[in-house]
Length: 172
Image 1 (cartoon, helix red, strand yellow):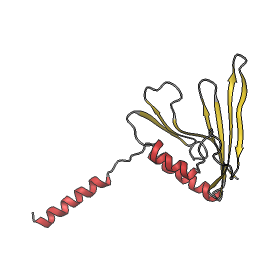
Image 2 (tube, rainbow, N blue to C red):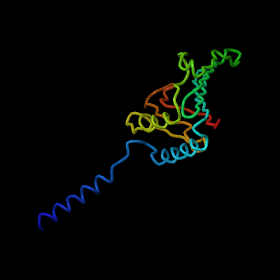
Image 3 (spheres, rainbow, N blue to C red):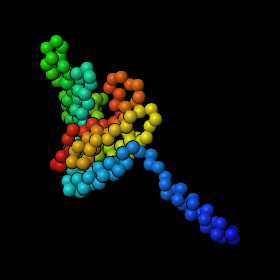
């Protein structure tokens, strides 16, 4: 076999192996479908929407942050924290506030002022990375868009979810 044929065969073999590159993220197909749903929603809403991030602990504490985005920029953040009073089992509001565009991020509590573009970026580059030491999850119950995305380290007992839980996404 002459030298040119040998080089051609080696190049073909190398291209086959490079085209079989494995993905670094879990649920890549589901993520891609969800990202397309997000892009469709973003266009139909003129990139103006509201979404709610929810957290609940096994001890009865919960909080919800509502982020409002207009024309692709966060313009409002609202927060409410609740807990269950013992022994009556009544839910009590512990903290509640709203920030406008001029006072964003002035309260220490509440979820970060991220747009859904930011969330999808973080999902792909942080929360959905394949991990040997954790279980990764993705749910898309908001009309195909992210409803839950993150990971839980193995052998973690309580409130170990690293990611985001979105209970609502709606156009403005």
